[in-house]
Amino acid sequence: MNHEQQNLINRIEAAAEASGLSAATICERAVGNSRLYDRLTNGGSCTYKIGGKIHQFLDGLEGLEATQ
Image (cartoon, rainbow, N blue to C red):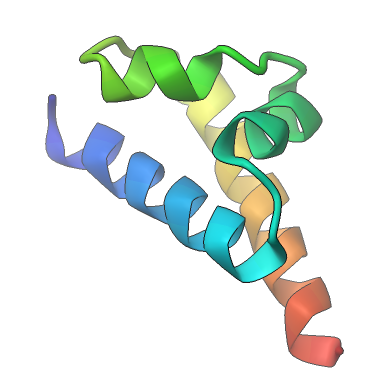
């Protein structure tokens, strides 16, 4: 697992904890794939495009939480 994958996993986990959603739900809402988190934590990967979509979703989610 490379640094970028670990960073993505860490962001997903932090967002899940902060929002009360599961990591699988966050991935489902971000890219329509609830199994992506399990794949990442088991050493799998995703494309840069998918990773970018997740980061973009997390940026928006963090922005919403900051305003509440």
